[in-house]
Amino acid sequence: MNISVVGLGKLGAVLAGVMAERGHEVTGVDINPVFVEAINRGRAPVREPGLDQMIARNAARLRATTDVRQAVARTEITFVVVPTPSSPDATFSLQYVLNAAKPIALALAQKTAYHLVVISSTVMPGSTGGEIRALLERVSGRRCGPDFGLCYNPEFIALGSVIRDMSRPDMILIGESDARAGDLLESLYRTVCPNHPPVARMNFVNAELTKISVNTFVTTKISYANMLAEVCERVPGADAEVVANAIGLDSRIGRKYLQGALGYGGPCFPRDNKAFARFAHMRGVDATLARATDQVNSRQAERLGERVLQATAEGDRIAILGLSYKPDTEVVEESQAIMLARMLVRAGAKVAVYDPAAMENARRVLDGSVEYAPSMEACVHNAAAVVIATPWPQFKDLQPEKLTTGARRTVVFDWWRLLPRQDFEPVADYFACGEGAGGAPQASPLRVAASPE
Image (cartoon, rainbow, N blue to C red; front, top):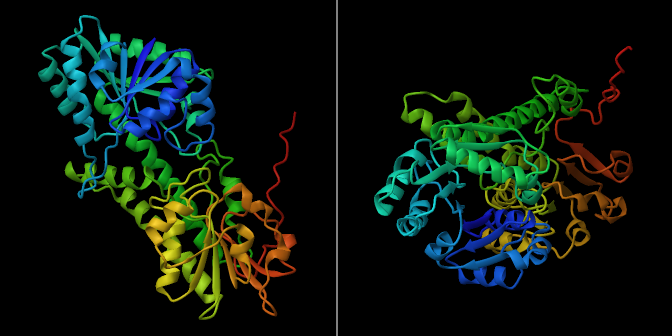
């Protein structure tokens, strides 16, 4: 198929690359000429593991332009993947979606062939069948359904694993104007996803609700795990990881995202949770659970910071390993590690930081308030406390002998449990998130006996 993708940011560029990888002809569109030039030179316009190689491999099937109307004119399906920033009231703004929809509609007015418009940006419930469809019909002079198709099709991805998440998703969510539009989009995905994911097709508003509900549910699970960890830390011998491993065996619960650590962050989880609560409130529903989830999450960095301050003295050097909101990305938006650094600085601590990818972005938000170490080893050198705040796999390589503070033992807060405790306890006071007072619990790790034949 001939496909156009409007918006070549962190999601749109990957979507364009994945579609081209599966043999489709793709035209990317962006108002940023730097992004357009990068695509046309066979390079990725944004950082995402594997994207540079994917775009280079498919340069013959992938081009880019700043002209939306031209791209729509020569393609059959147009994906809109532009930002929908949060408004002051926590709802999502449609400004960029509507700005993109207008030239798409002008192109539709000139086409006689059927064309499918797919909104992949996250929007508030009621938006696709409301303002977006109304603008497309008004400007194009054509009717949604008989003349062109419209679908809402958000992605469920995490930065750092976008290629995998788009290529092998758990499900495909389609909100459709009519069966013809849904059939066309489903048939496209059957060529794109080799894992044959289930396809959930429904009307617009149900799909819009599904999108923000998924993220709200996941954040609730994360906050529950962090609440459990806090409880376990106050019970001698308790271990939140042992408990989570056990309750995760229940098929109604599952183990994913059930880990006590720092809270969630990034460009999606926090705002989707707030948007769901706001949407419920606008309809007279008190979304108590969503609000409580956000409250638990908002205190995680401070909770860890208080532990660090209790274990150190004034003037001590504190090392924070990890600044991005998750591994394999440079994004620091709503990063718990950044919140932790700010809290410690406000308390008067000397803070050194290191991240494999996010140093430049961290400088923009932390300015000169912290020391920016050139390496993991330089960061932990002479640090009274070391905090693993983001679970980058590189931090597993930290060696105990790198912890040098003279006569005092270093305090290690391994908040993602990356390090082998037995290697560090001889030289450091080791603490893991969710472990009860008195150090390592005496109970054996969870062992699951095989079911009898």
